[in-house]
Length: 232
Image (cartoon, rainbow, N blue to C red; front, side):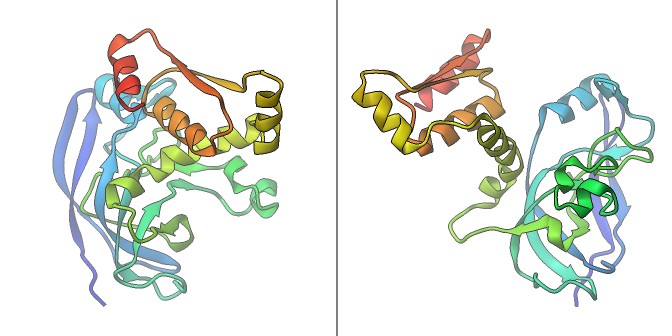
């Protein structure tokens, strides 16, 4: 089994103090797998941490690697990892639940009261993010990428999941309801506020459903609206 022990990582020490450093990466234990990171997106929170040394009330108190929208390839597996093998391409789910609270035990771990996030100063000591060459991560928080999905596409899985969860909670019209609205001469329109990355992904996700007669995006930034327009 090949295990990399040293990884270059982008470490934030404070506002606008980002350094390329070496981090020791131990062999994966338990159900961990070791990953070679191939693509990482920059979230708005990463930009806030870099620019201000904080993201809202979460202040950077110790050096922390940024990045959490990532995909990569498995390079080593821990002794208890059962479902992934070396060479598998995966997208990372970087919210790490406690697995012990009521929500975790009720299969609603996304609501875990003790959730810790990579590249977030919410908890201390902070969990390093994934802007690094190699990292260890729980196997069940790594999701296999289908053939044809690039590493860049895999890095978008995390923000896209935010959109899909919001859509499910908003109860969008079904195809039958959309057809009924059309037969009555009514519209089934969607309004999205904000044409940033999440807003654009939301528009794309809604467009795939084909249940909306129109999708409107509002933003105060003309450049963002131009990007939305260019993307159709």
